[in-house]
Image (cartoon, rainbow, N blue to C red):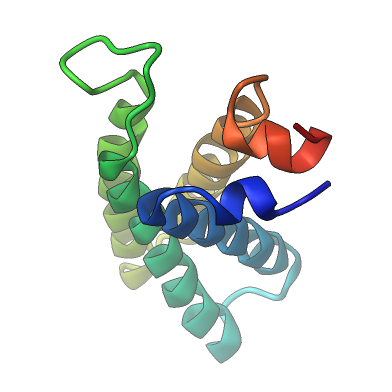
Length: 134
């Protein structure tokens, strides 16, 4: 395991990866910690910001494979969908719809961080080199 392939990558990839990893770590903490507390709200806003950075930075990341429309791949649909759902999740929280808020945020965590994260481990991708070596 070596961070060197990631550190050698272009700035948008570096920003995207570190925002996603921080979002994953903070998401795990948020899921395990008590809800409704001041710290949950503060860290929740930090998590939303990290996911927004992850989504927006992905628009400057273009691989050679899986392009469907110009330089965009199917994963870029997630980059459009995630910020929309972040707003939906925040609106649910602001309106005290706890169950809807929880479901929305958990779905974002699973879809945008866990499932998308697994796909970064495909051979030929930078995170595959980071985790499994060159």
